[in-house]
Length: 231
Image 1 (cartoon, rainbow, N blue to C red):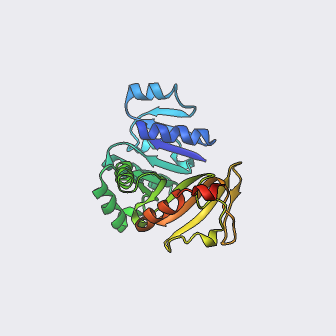
Image 2 (image 1 turned 135 degrees about the vertical axis):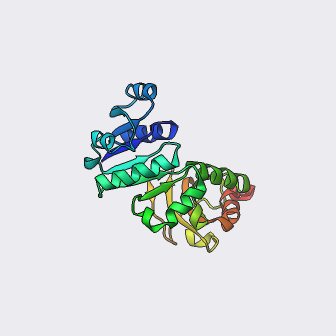
Image 3 (image 1 turned 90 degrees about the vertical axis):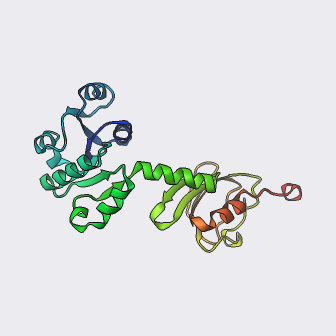
């Protein structure tokens, strides 16, 4: 996949490095001259010093051949304009819009005339705030958030002394709004469980659950075996 990224601050740089590590081709457009010079030594792809809200700069970045475009600066208005221009120059490009202000995110998602210019809207600040608040309320999870749905994917580690270790999924008495979506044994083998699946003694369990049952799920999977059960 060929991806053009606008803005290479902390977020843009990390995204570029991750994409390159996964084998994708990346071109970065960065306005700051010194930052662009620095980036040229840190990434494998092309780094262009310029303004991605200028159609000529986007064309120089080969936007017409790009599979995806990500506007990741800290300026909402510039990111939006760049996505509009990218879609205009390449209607098939998949655009990702970063918004720092959560209010703007909701507005842009609701305005039909704007929605056609971006395929994905992300607010790192909103996600970070949600992640922190959820960890304050229900700590102790490795988690992926779904803020709009009021749900999360969480991960538990089985160490051999968890009460649920070795039990059948159908016998766990999971809350109604929780579902085990995957399990890994201690060797890292993936298991897609059914009701008759026996959980490994050691490994990881991946669960999709609504926020209102997370405490119950946590209590179930973190409960330890009694001394009698261990023996």
